[in-house]
Length: 230
Image (cartoon, rainbow, N blue to C red; front, top):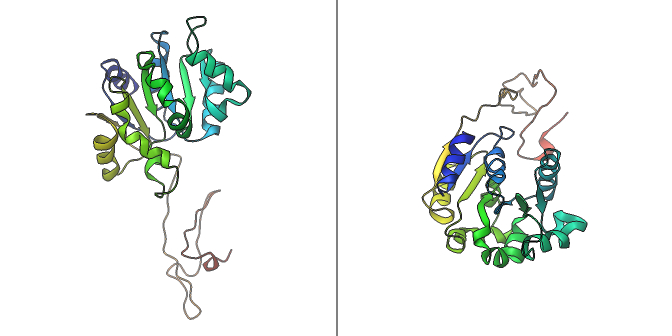
């Protein structure tokens, strides 16, 4: 899957990659970042913790990755200077991570002035753009016009699960004629056992008033908090 995605990136084609969490989606943009050191990959990720963990792992592999904005901590100004005021004095980083807010509010214009230096724009954890109410993280609406601002930069959307409606929105509102690359979402380490449990004063449930579970973790879905009785 990573090989196919990289080939499409090399041809400048937008892609939607649907893979299970922990299955190696990040390789789809990490490997291209190692080619053509005159350009860098921009990765928009929703959480600071995810940005920091990825950069930490990449640095262990001697891959030059930096963050912009709050996730950069004390290195924020230095990283900005290196990326936007370089003048050829030092090599560009391979990967540049940032939050969607920082991309939209702080660096979109500067990146737009340096389109020729961006080899790939990655929208990581794309489900966050859909799994929100209309007033939360409004910056995500900005990405609906991302191809108008970066028409020649291939965009890669990474997501673990995707509905038909979300897929249609990605194809129409966010990307330009993207290719969908999807693997089977099969998590062998997760098992589901679903039973209906109705507790009343007059009768026992269909499960004889008990939920039996063999394992260490249990998720119990209730309509109201007061319904559960451990």
